[in-house]
Structures are given as structure tokens and as C-alpha cells.
Image (cartoon, rainbow, N blue to C red; front, side, top):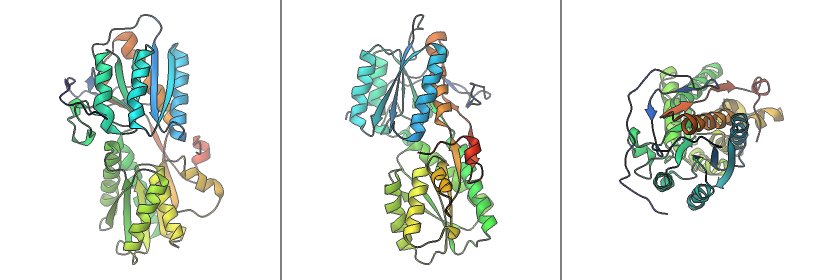
Length: 348
């Protein structure tokens, strides 16, 4: 794939107060024209394309459903495209969406390295571009190394807030279990080139450490899949045979579920594991089985809210010329075996 450098930068706007964007969501208060900032208002029928990685995953299924419902409410013509995990296909599908006269693109990229090329395609055709969930940079392949002013506006969840909630709940479970720091380790599992994952994990580690000092943490690099996490955590367990208790969190449910499976396979009982997931769409499977599980809680993130908010935000841009917020966030809820059903969690 081609990485395009030295793109014109979006303007860095001043910080403002948090503003409501509906769906119990909030914005950082920064405003950005973003890619497609010179896009003309659309007076007729608005057409959008929502391009998602891993479109068959439960979270993204829900996100697409929320987007479609909001589009129907607003009278928008919306097409949802499943990009799978193919970064190369992303470019082709973006070009196809523009050829089909989409006025605005909302995208969750499979790989952030394709971001600059996607940005340039949208810019060249004066098509508004908004990301959801994962960040992309206008000037380089790695959002982690990108100036904030060069990040494409994003709708999703606050990585810092999510991670903090996960870390606080893990600390609560640790204290409830009565474990000691000496024979406990925490595992932070995530795909380390995904910026939002790093934000979540760092906040979880910080929150846990503030409440429970002295527990050694082990960072585990994964590909954000259950099998990938299982393999890497299994190796970590082998390298640390003297540890009695394990606490695990990660970028998503997949990392935590994979880690817990590795612990089960290693003969570690559920009583000696505290897993706090992020998503709840896999965690609920454990709880629904009625069997003892190391998955003690999970942060429920409702993709439907993100999809709806992304469509509303794009609509406001195309119809009314309203600048994109640099980021806008949907709400989250901590759930466990006793509350997940009443909260409306859908299992994958």
C-alpha cells in the first residue's frame, strides 16, 4: 500500500467546554473541519457510506444497526461496507464509495497505516471524512506519533475514561478477593500499534496502580484476537510459574477472553483469576453458561450508540456545515454476571 506524507494539516481549534451531541454522548470541545473541510453543504438527498473493519463482529453489527436506524430517521441514504481485515481492500472500497457519489465517508480502518491514503482520496474528491472507533492520521501511518491537529475527527469512546473504569473495577475485585501484591501479577494485553488501545490500557494500569500499589504488571503484545491473546498469555504464564493470582485487562473482550482461556488451559482456577473485559459481548457468554469464570466484569460499549452518533455528526456537517468535533464520545456501563442481561448486552 502507499503511504502519503506531508498532507495539509487540519486547523487546531481551541479547547472548549464539553457539549452535548445527543445519545448521552459528549465531545472534547475541540472543533475541526477535518478532511473534506471545504465540502459544500448538501441541499438534496444525502448519501453516506459507513466502512467498517470486522463487520461481522457483534460490536460492529450493533454499530451498523445504530447507523442505519439514525440514517432512516434523518432520511439519509446509507450504505454499510464490511472491510474485514484487508487494508488493501479499504482503499478500493473507499474509491468505490466515492464513485457511487457518497457525500460523506465514515470509516473504521483495519490498519491505521492506510489512513493517509484514505485521507488524500477523500480530500481530492472533496468528500467529508469521519472516523469511528479507531484513529487515523493525515500525515503518517501511526496515529500514536501524530500531532493532535493531524488526527482525523473521530466518534467513539474515550480510551482514557474506559481504561480508568476497567482499572478501578479490577482494583475493586482485587480487594474483594483479599489477595496480596507479592503473589499477584496484572496482564495488560493489546495490539500495540493501535492508539486507542494504548490509551485504554495505560489508563487501566494507572487507575489500578493508584488503588492497589505494588502489583507488578506484564505488558503482552497481541493482535487483539482471542487466539492471538491466548497464545501470548500462555507464553507469559509459562515464564512466570510462581505467580498464584492473575488480573487481566486489555483493549477489548477478545484480549481478556483469550487470556482467561490460556489460564484455564494452564490449570489456573477461576477463583485465582480476575478478568475485566472491554465490550462485554464475549464476557456475557461466560456468564450465560452458569459456570465459574475468571471474567469478573466487563465494560459494556454499545456500538449502536457510536453508529448513530457518527451518522448524526456527518449529517450535521453535510446539511448544516457544522464543523466536526475533534472527538465525540458515547456512554459506557460496567456490567457483570448479575447485571449484563438487564443492561441489554448482546452476546457474539
